[in-house]
Image (cartoon, rainbow, N blue to C red; front, side, top):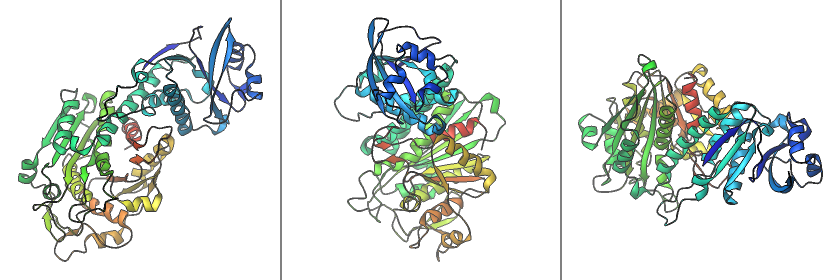
Length: 493
């Protein structure tokens, strides 16, 4: 897909794309657009040939300079009700429409979208990648020619090229993460995923990679990661990608930690036959952290970020961990396992403690951790927990509101602390048969933050979507990649 830019519309054979608000006569450039359509814009709307209803796409033929050209209009609804999320959805539906129609080229009148210039331009670039993502997997089919061959001429009085490029980079980072999540698990074992991470980041500017294999993990005391990975022939890995821009050399890092269970059978606390399909997505926390560091590096942000992903398969064998087993974590705390299907918090315990050794200003972990969070707040909100107060989390909540990635803070207090420390044989226990399991799981991970400011994002509901929408197809969403990159860039955390 190629974008070109111009300040004034120049006649071409390409279809013309316009944004159409409820009252088009209020457009700043109404006269120019109306003139382009031979003074017929108001009539086309009144006769319902073109619709102003939000997200609705209509088209018609218009004679322009003796040539009949196609006009594609996408409704914006009431201009005052447009939000960042809505403008993203507008462009998502537009690109999906263009792809479905196999449109080869088009000319977009940017100023007709009548919203904040930067937000609109970033949304245009972002959705050009995110909304039409496709993962062919192992199907024998060619990539859609639209993805590589489509050309869009953008007419705008304001310079928007940099904003569009920025948005495209964010979208590329989301799709980078999606590929990890969508890949079948026999093609995305911990070892294979490590190889792909190394290939993607090795040799990148201001970057170094540290990889710990199963022997390193065992020898260095990562007892919880080792325990979870014991049952699989595909052994665990811990991969850390550190990006330190020269302008941030003496700055404490932001630590990002992602849960990467490349497949989760549940172990001996085995999942049912309906609970296992889709467990390839249990690596989405790790995939999204990789998308975050990918975007930060691509934008060459002047920041210091440490991204750690813990990769393991939770399987069954004679060597697998069992309920009632006790293991010693990297932090030195002992953990009694009561449920082997509560493995995510185990690997995150070691990974979060590992991240704390970088003396970060904040640790943020991301995990498809609990079904309980979905039961509590649904599948369109991410549950957020922290060991600090509103000062740490409020800017993140505000930014998520801006990006449309909904967050909801959930409680952590002495109730969960007592439950986590209720084992009769170890310092901690990984599961209890009591309500409040999302908070319990978060509280368990908190024990390993080692005094660092810490935020936990339970993306169990938001890491995937059950059906296609304007943001893309059914499957992985890349949730919070955009928000976290912006938070790091704006120094909000």
